[in-house]
Image (cartoon, rainbow, N blue to C red):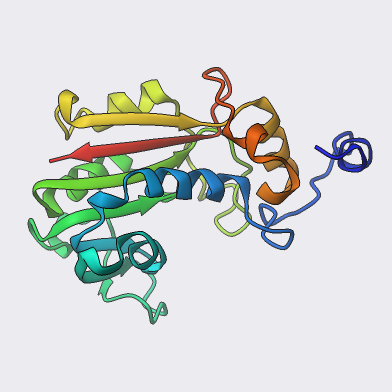
Length: 215
């Protein structure tokens, strides 16, 4: 990290950015999300469901994707093709998708167990869920104190996902280290620290937990 950033910013008690560093570049958690999806891009194929928009479906699925849906509870989202609450099984299709991309969503939902069970239900046999959840993150400014519920570890992710998916069908990764955690909380972007620093993994300081689950 540059000395200027270290000296001028890291000792301040307020963040540099209130928006995860978006205005400075790519947020650090997004760097890890995209590394995870890139690693598992071959799973993004056939009929795919993504939340809020189809950015990752298009970027990482490409021509392997035949059809895709976008789900949102917000009826004002014009990108959505399905308006539904992920907690409501009756509002969701049955065994339709080869892949579900669920990034940075579960921590905003009180009943995450229902969501995981319902996502299992919308997957075809051998379908794949690619899910990311935060281990370290600020309270979201949009959802606020009353709408940002959870943070996860590898152990808690394994525990909750095994309620729906078989143990041998789960693979859980973690990304991050203490420097990445601090920089993310302060609002620095991924471009402001080196790739070597980003790619170092410390099991005691995960920033992001990533789950690949197969039905």
